[in-house]
Amino acid sequence: MGKFGVLLLNLGGPEQPEDVRPFLFNLFSDPEIIRLPFPWLQRPLAWMISSLRSKKSQENYRQIGGGSPLRRITEEQAQALRVKLKEKGEDVSIYVGMRYWHPFTEEAIARIKRDNVSKLVILPLYPQFSISTSGSSFRLLERLWKEDPSLHTIDYTVIPSWFDRPGYLQAMADLIANELDRFPNPDHVHVFFSAHGVPVSYVEEAGDPYQREIEECTRLIMRSLNRPNNYTLAYQSRVGPVEWLQPYTEDALQELASQDVKNLVVVPISFVSEHIETLQEIDIEYRELAEEAGIENFQRVPALNTHPIFIEDLANMVLEAAQKPAVTFADTAQMPAKTKLYPQERWEWGLTTSAEVWNGRLAMLGLLAVLVEILVGRGPLHAIGLM
Figure 1 (cartoon, one colour):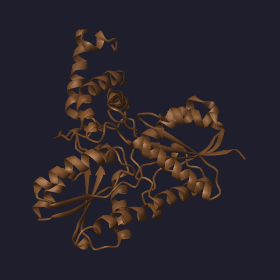
Figure 2 (tube, helix red, strand yellow; figure 1 turned 90 degrees about the vertical axis):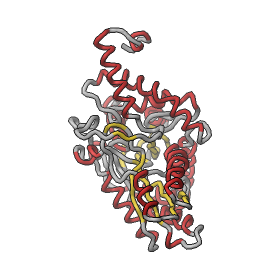
Figure 3 (cartoon, helix red, strand yellow; figure 1 turned 135 degrees about the vertical axis):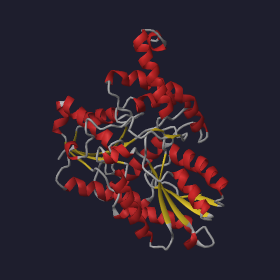
Figure 4 (cartoon, helix red, strand yellow; figure 1 turned 120 degrees about the vertical axis):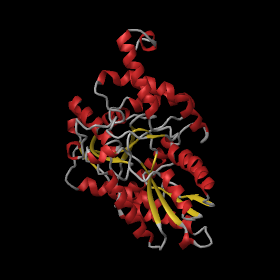
């Protein structure tokens, strides 16, 4: 029997200040983040946006220690998963593949080939599927498989999403209960789920199941929690000249404050690891906004990280997937080629300082600058040899 492997997929993040600009370049170079009518503009525009955005993003990362802990935590999850699978009688090699920073997905695939893995379970560390997260990684893997015939010998299967897994739901409920019980009257604390947002066009034009899965996931977690608390679901990280899923986190916080809500437990529903959007956006930006609006007690549920019930469920998920009929890349949701992502018919200017999403205002200015330079034949991009 050949070697058994698991590939964990995640976004990745800069580990030190000098990583921020190339990380942003990689992010903006992905056509699923910014889709342009002319593909040859992708890299010049990515260079422009990452250059304009890097200083502000570096400042955000400095607020949480200088870099993202995402790689460290993901590797800790990988080690915990390996140990748990070993306890269940399976000697499994675990690989980490990041979409936009080291270790890149391509690096992980190279190690998988080197180790002669013959059976592979591909597990994204995103509970809910979105074409911009798991979908982007699946499309990259599909391309790698097409370009490299040697990968065809690997018997692989994909786990597209797992938001309704009982162990995941119970682990989330346990973390929420722990935070609620810190309050004198835990049943009267408002539970506030904050999910990473996506443009409305992803859902309405491309058929992204993300919103449906997020809403169902929230309902299932509250059912697992089995407490009488009121709760709200909102979407964070809205930026740029597009309409995003609503309600927006900043608006929902102010609305709750206007309803005289004083005690709040915030749940980062899209994330299983601490990173910039939990440590900086929620813990610093949204906390300040909530307190200024009148919310007196703002507490956040920690990310799952290596929660034992969560790791146990990941291990069970891997073993179950290995026994079921294979799910291929082609079986996962795909982005229709003509989906209109940027801009949309309705322009809505919004701004947060999240470092892991692109700033729409600067992007549009950058695009105009690139177009002007193409027309006049001179400018900074020509000077540095990008055009």
